[in-house]
Image 1: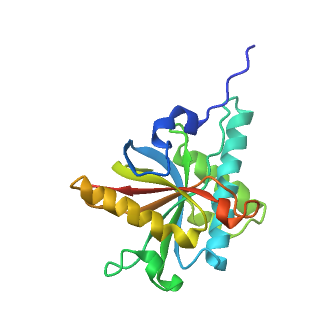
Image 2: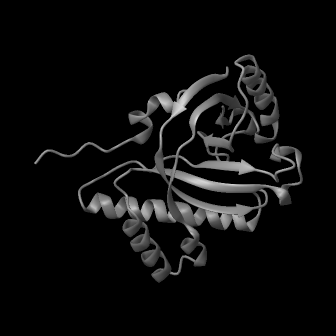
Length: 203
């Protein structure tokens, strides 16, 4: 019996993840994501626990599907970030005011039942209550501007300024949540070499 090719969502939807060091418009279709939300900076225990919970769920579901003969690659970590209504530029505010939703893109054939079974398995293994906070939802961003940011996360404001100027030139405006797609692992890559796709919905 021929081996089924592993599904890679980044290759399948490569147009949505193409990003250079210049702003460009892209159309992002409706997609399925595992998600978990919280408040505070990325160095908080809350964020770290959420990180572990969503990755644990993602890989538990993936292994279950692989055993069933349907294999796919777990996507890279992504996150939506926002501040208060008064301060949408969250990075200019104290970190305890930051809001986030960690997300991992997931094949459309993954259902709520898959997630429920994964959560049950992880809890039985003593993986913590945060696992129960993981959800499966559809996100549709539509038309967006995105750009590749190379360097430390705390210098993303410079890249966002270029994106904002581009959006104004196009006669558009930002409309939605700041979206980051982490192409590099900060535990293994020096800050100046980190590669992150920045995305913002526009109207």
